[in-house]
Image 1: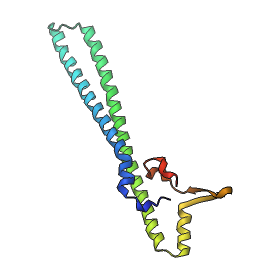
Image 2 (image 1 turned 90 degrees about the vertical axis):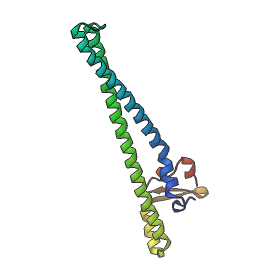
Image 3 (image 1 turned 90 degrees about the horizontal axis):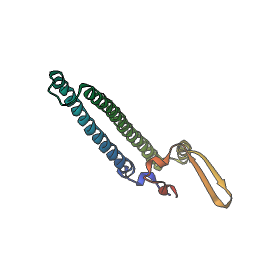
Image 4 (image 1 turned 60 degrees about the vertical axis):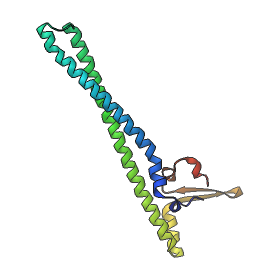
Length: 160
């Protein structure tokens, strides 16, 4: 059986979410770079309007208007994608904070359990375990009051 308090916090929490956070940051940076390029292109097209007015541009005004409309649409879409990616990154950070808090809570239960009397140990276990089912052939199913999977990197570690 895995004893949660024997596994370092960094191994449980940081390693679990580090790769996902890095991927989200890279995705956000790529979107921001693409958005900035689209914005520069849009500004260049808008600057071309003056040349069209003076009659010095190679672009017809209808074509330039279509290009500006398409570039504005692209910029707006990229802006929306950047906002969504940023919000997802913030949600991931909040999730890490919540998991960290739950970890601290479980560790405090483990420390309390080690020094508790038998009656206190029963109360602690009742706070952590919702239900225990025992089947034929000594099979046991335990329902916890928390999700142990969020602490572990993969579900193979759940099999005790």
